Image (cartoon, rainbow, N blue to C red; front, side, top):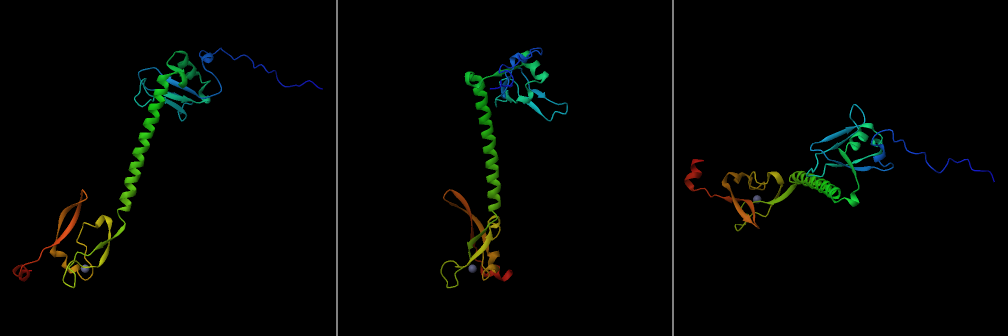
Length: 204
Ligand SMILES: [Zn+2]
């Protein structure tokens, strides 16, 4: 059987020539905490399109802990700030303060999401407010008692703009005045017909 020509199982010793290199484990994204009292930005390229931004130590949203991907691990600037202790590589499992920071980030993220969701829902409900709804005519019943039985389609947003009146009764509109009535704790606009006196009728 021929001898295998595979490379030796033992990896070459890592180069420790760059300060901080020995402090950075390889092979996985790292959780890194900013220890300084101000925000910190680490950028891989001069244009800064690929960057990590830490908030000041103790940030209320947990922004002082960021995930640093492998692409940054051999970056000289990153190694330098690790070596100086400006950035500390953390392990969430055995560090309650990092777990707390991540918890704050999740809470802030969930909060942002729920605000966005509420805004989205509000905008949907604004749109649906423009649905056509059926309103009963507030005109008199042609048989004398009660209200007219006709319904008319009205835009939800315009339902309080004028009294709902069917074709038969629409010329009565000037006789109606709005008033507020509380129904199930909500204020609902209602219309009341003001019968004109004989004298007012003559003047108009
Ligand atoms: Zn009517």
